[in-house]
Image (cartoon, rainbow, N blue to C red):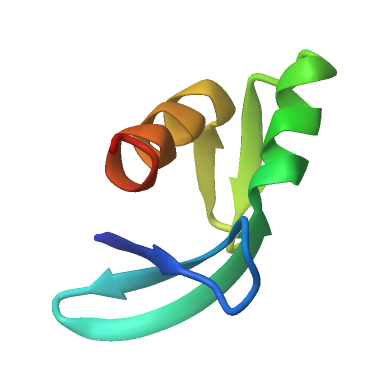
Amino acid sequence: VFDIVNGTEKGSFLIKARFLGVDMEEFHIKYQDLLQLQYEGVAVMKMFDKAKVNVNLLIFLLNKKFFNK
């Protein structure tokens, strides 16, 4: 399970990975970095050295959760 919360800086997010209710790892990402990856045509990024995440889908989810007001 991935939990996404606002980061300490504006435009940054903290992604927490949990498995069976146990916190595993945390990953800090900036929205600008995601947009740069999308511009460069990167479809999939590696996260936590174990998971692959679709960049466009992650941007969509962040927009829907945090910027939909």
